[in-house]
Image 1 (tube, rainbow, N blue to C red):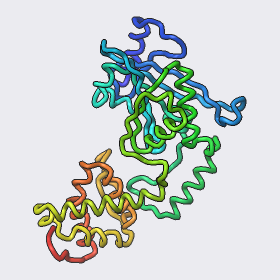
Image 2 (image 1 turned 180 degrees about the horizontal axis):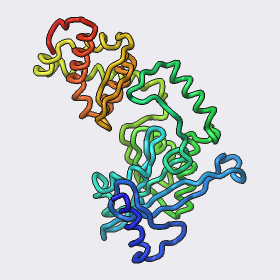
Image 3 (image 1 turned 60 degrees about the vertical axis):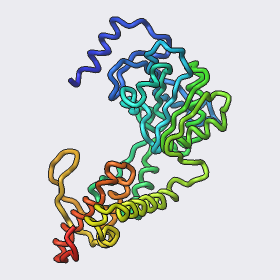
Image 4 (image 1 turned 135 degrees about the vertical axis):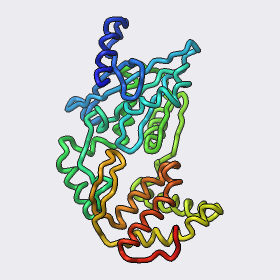
Length: 318
């Protein structure tokens, strides 16, 4: 099974017509059909275009239908830091209707995926962390990077997108931006409005907001909304009457070693559990409706376990 992409490319090389430069056949993660890939050079520093350059990885999936073709749709990943190429798995699902009349363009923005990815070690889900430790990790990360992170901001990405559009002869384009990708879309529209046919902004991160300042407030608002919806639901309110109080209890837990099952490998893992780790897990789950709905049950089970280990009898069975 792991040889499937290579075999598929070999078959395509024997049967497909030659593609115009700079396109070549490629297989994208999570997508069943052969796509077209290209490398587009952009300057590391737009103010010094004759100096160092970056090579951006771009992919195109051709429209399948015979309908009148419309401008290509460019997918802008979020994060910031997510790979645009990895969004190819959407092409056989929610984006299938789009391919009836549009080509879809995927791009690993500078510093992501296959476009000179900037990567650093970060605490795993099973590691306790503190603001001080995370600040130290961020500092050591910046110092270890081979390329200057000042050249990897949103404005540079906007200029890259315009260079990719012009270099590949895409003409006018449509944009889809998700989460932080909406900010890239908004800034591109402001700078190059004549090149945009239409745009979809999904989960807007406006230019006026500070991502790292507002994220904690948004997480708190989402948690309060969950508490309110549980109180308003008779079944949830009856099963988890002390949801807020129990969470506060967990947040104040002293550090202690526990053994849990790794959700990816299924293997047992021993980790240090404290209120900070619990808060991080809850915040992550609040992003996804399916996981968000499980938080009352998960929180209750963790509380019972930790209360029992601390020889604290729960006031009410949850």
